Structure formats: structure tokens, C-alpha cells
Image (cartoon, rainbow, N blue to C red; front, side):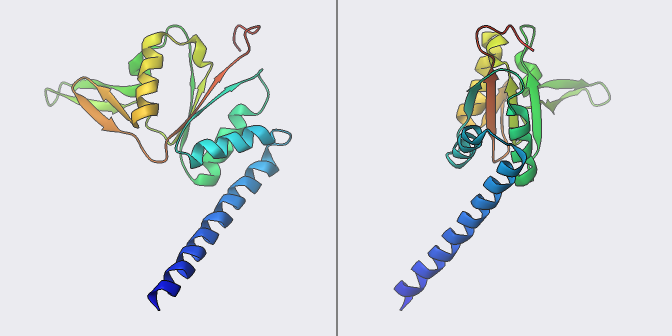
Length: 168
């Protein structure tokens, strides 16, 4: 008798997940017109607990897509503009000295958001890209001798403009 109950519960849970996924997809489709491939790839990355790299000219709804995903998931969002002068600590955060206590306190960087838009990632120095790759691959950042876990879900959508464009 227990065997017949378990599949019913699993089927109901699966049905609920399907309905939630369908609602997220509908929300994105209503707000991002003409970019079905982008929506699909964004949702695949989310479901696979992965990340994605999008190449395209400015104005193709890349920022809007990930912002809307953050809205519908009730997660927080941060856009990072990658530039040649960016430092790893600009992403991860840094230890801040507190003179009143005489010790250091970790100040979280923008990577401690659920959804990140890494805009024009190809413009960043290698050390910055390395810090981002640790966050993406291990869902954590290391600052000094300490490692800090990142929030879940954690998704990075990195963008780069086509070779003909220098940047926006």
C-alpha cells in the first residue's frame, strides 16, 4: 500500500515544480519579446545549477532578462560592468579594518547576490576573471585565509560584445 502512495506524492510534487517552472517561463516571455532562445538558455542554466555566456550587440534584452528572472524568483540581482581596471576585491569583497575594535571585518562584494550580470567579461583582467571562475565553479569566494559560501541559487550570466564592438 505504501508503494502506491509514494508515486502519487512524487507525481504531485513534480507537477507543482512543472507549474512553477511554467509560470516563470510565462513571466519572462511576457516581458522579453523576440528573445525565446535567450529565455530558454537562462532557464536551462538555472535548472542545471550552471551559468551562461551570451554574446550579442547592446540592446538585445540581456540585462532585462536576468533582472526579470531575479524578480520572478524573488532573488537579488547585481550588474557588474567589467573594465580593464577592475580588481578581484571589487567582486569578492575585502577585509576592512575597524579601528574601534582593532580587528578586520569582511565586507561582502557584489558576488554575494543570487543573480549576477557580468557585463563585457572579456574586458576584465585575468585575475578578476579567475575570482569570478572560483565563484562560478565552487559557489564560494576566498578572501585572504577565509572562504565564504555564496547564496543559493547563484547564477552568473556573463556577456561579451561581438569583436567589432569595443564596448558600450
